[in-house]
Figure (cartoon, rainbow over the protein chains, first blue to last red):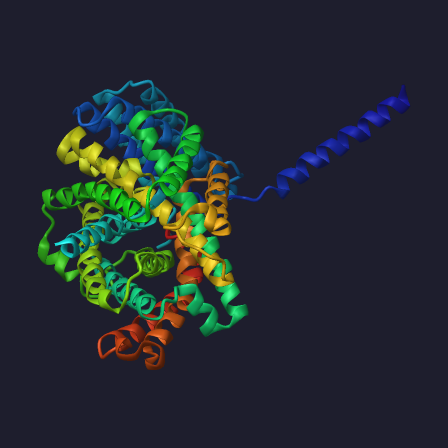
Length: 141
Length: 412
């Protein structure tokens, strides 16, 4: 029983070490990478807001609206994946960017189904402004 | 009368085929980032492609030698082989991006699975090349690409300050917020220059001149087509830059999808504008996919000495035919991995400028050679302009990759 416990203990330590090493090996997001990804999210949010605005105004076909929303959703998802690294000192800003991207992705998913409203458009505009503020805070003087 | 019609169609075709997905994205985003301050690059790049387009077709008409024969003769086998490989890698990446662009347009028009639409787009490109004669390919894709004129309407509608637009024709350093923005400005200048003067345009245009059996008598017609056609095409490029500045800059949108670009047209003309923009982009990107496909096959066949020609029966030029089929297959395989077409073309455009000096130098040397060209050698206009653009492109080629790295692909 003692031998089993020792083996299990060693296995646990080994597993813990592997987890720590993996975490250490995963590259931290640089300030530039975070700024660029946030900039992408900002541009996608603004593009989505414009898309919603024109759909509400009846200037688009339903097929175009849904397809463009789907394309943008895919792009936002990719931008979110680019943020999937530890942020180090900028972790709180990284988390904020991921949160904005998640909200944007959720709205785009609704738009793929054809849902759009003035409230959504205004919300998307506010997401773009949030992303812009975050992006500006990451720029060097 | 037939000649006038031929020239007229040539002009319209040159105009309609001027813009492809890379130029669309770079030009619009240049407007978003810097307003009208990069308009001078549109003008300069257009003049450059006029000079070298006219020169390469004139050389082909007089000497019956296409560009890659000149490259092999003037640079030697090893340097020529390097240029061939580099040029065809750029062609392949550009072709992949254009096929992806066509698939995105089909999705925006009809919906559906993007990956299935990539296969359909590749099939459209294949069938167009297989079944249509070269002049019909040029007419269909070139003329229907003119639907992009809706962007000229959008540019005018949004009432830019025309004095500022004109001021943008003068090269200058813009006022920027950060030092690093100067590098982004330089990056966009280089990328825009490359997107207007993409090497495949020269290869394709010269090969087309040989396919159409141009002689020295066709040189005046060539000049008219190049000057007026490319000049009118530059209006489209200028309109895209204005649209970037007037429509997307205020919204802080960097255009990363063709669908977003189309919103500029729908904003003024509703669904009609939207469909014109999408239709124009379909034929513009499709035309570019066809040109890069054939250009790659022309380059290979001409360099190694295989019989070639789109006008010939496929069975009579089997290796040329196999080459362009393989290019379509490889391009489709690249884009079906899911990589963003806009991302591919951004890299292919930057690498294209690196090989432009290797393309233009043999053309310039052949054009200046009185033994080969006789009375049709470069004169007092073409010679200095040819040297000017060769030096300019060489500077751009040296700066391209460092700028790509420093600016993180233009993102600052």
